[in-house]
Image 1: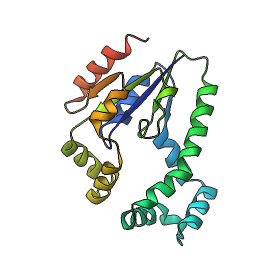
Image 2: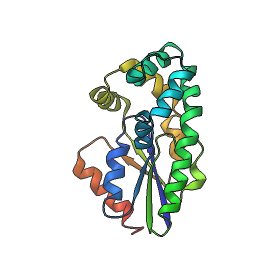
Image 3: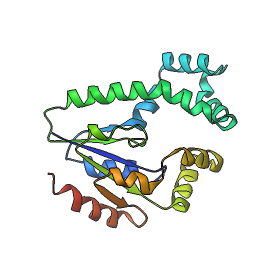
Image 4: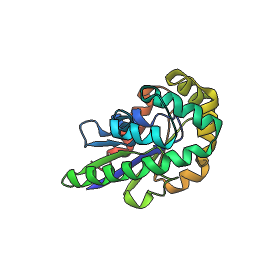
Length: 188
């Protein structure tokens, strides 16, 4: 079994890269998907609303966004709740798929969370800040939140030192796929 970690800065294209690489090659664990599922879970929503004194459970993400923008220390409080849950699900995923040749893990904060030792191979997805901001605004639309989250991440040049491969995702899908296939064919 080869565990392949896929990481990169905010809105660099990690999800696209993860889907391309894992397609017909092996199962994919997405930390973002796990977090999204948590926000749909009633007991999690209750815990978060209690911890952050949020009155409307239906608007929990919107409320958290305001709380984080008001005080960036709230990100750490939120991560202390979310990260252990994500790690537990990641370990479960690994056990369930231990007989597969390739396992893929899309982990946005892989380096920041010091998870490098869990992977045989780490691919870093890179894109310039201007392009990443454009992508982020297209999805979620908040430049202030982008800047806050982006500052929280370790700089690309430092993260790259912990990675086996760097894939630049600033051109078109054809070029991206070509570069990814050149990497993955060594491990298939």
